[in-house]
Image 1 (spheres, rainbow, N blue to C red):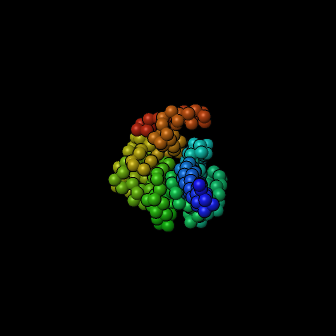
Image 2: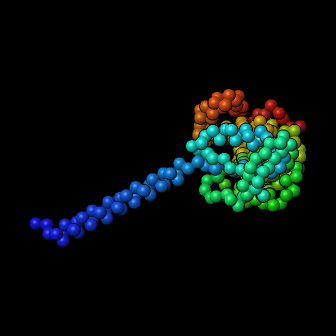
Image 3: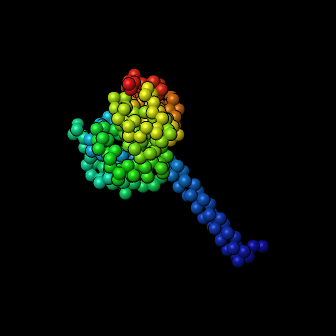
Length: 235
């Protein structure tokens, strides 16, 4: 015969076990939610950036809202603009959170000035060291190279500005004919529109070629899939 004391003890045990099970399931749910959190694509902005260097990859990553989120950062925060008069509202680097991150550095005429900006170069180096991937478009690779991040790595850049980019740091293994290059976590593309090809190439590497082709088809873009051969070749 079960006494009242034994019954209370049994009920207490069952309640504790039930609460423990709820806690375990809650932790699993939190972990799953964390895993499913979109990866941040952090655009490193500065005045006189090249428009398509930013908005080409932004279109590609930005439409994949379940996988990626877009953020724009600069040294001072606030509005950054360019010679096309396209303003972008940015946040200060200090507001950047932790977690998985992709750094994207655009090019543009502004890179001619920013290669001599130690504050920005130091920040690019710092963020790149802790990011999952680092992407550059066009002469954005000059900023990576000047920061020393491309030393000994395969890289490419805008073919019309190739000699200038190489002069910023000849220690990189510069490729004159590639559309984009991949070396570990570093992706560097040729000029302007090549950033879109590289972004799709990145998706292909992460999610499969069919996934990337589907994205290209959705935006009605003729993706150049051959990363090793650019129609534009540096002299």
